[in-house]
Amino acid sequence: MAEIIELFKLQKGVNTMLDMRTIGEEKAQEVLQAYTSQDEPINPIAIAEKLGIKVINAEFTTDMISGALQVHPGDDSRVATIYVKHDDAPVRKRFTIAHELGHYFLHAESQTDFIDEQSVFFRNGQKNKEETEANDFAANLLMPRELVLKIWGMSGDVEFLSHYFGVSRTAMKYRLNNLGVSV
Image (cartoon, rainbow, N blue to C red; front, side):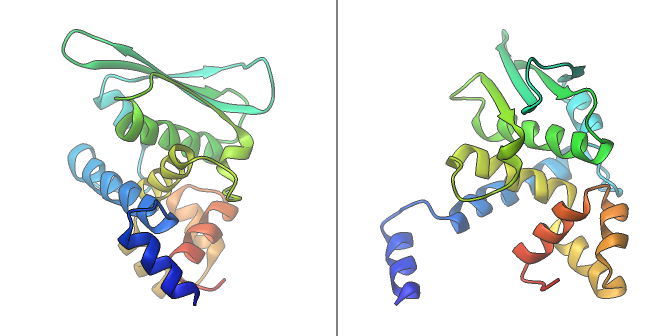
């Protein structure tokens, strides 16, 4: 019965997690092709720099904020700044920057300011569509599907993969589970 309901939702155009993942994955692949040599680990700061986006280590007024994106409309292009929590671990900063790039590529046409609390990064089904899409974009940017599955097939070790891709163990487990790999 659940499959029938999901099929009905897809036919009626209701946004589902599958729809959101498709948007994030497609855009991440476009960005990887356009802005990287796809060497691992992917460097989200280098991508931002190629786009003219400043990345600034910031101290926020609350520990709950992990990152923010501010887009300033320019003459012919968007000028943006990504703020990342200065004392977060490097793997956390990488995911935050990739997440903010997701907002830049997916949502900055309709909104100019994004402030992301730490809870945003744990997809508990309570977050809005834009946050889920930005998370999915970040996961696909930092941990591309084909490469993750290839390396997983060779190593089968979550710890190895998390170091290889420069992400946290938790992010790698979540990514593997999303790709249908039981860990």
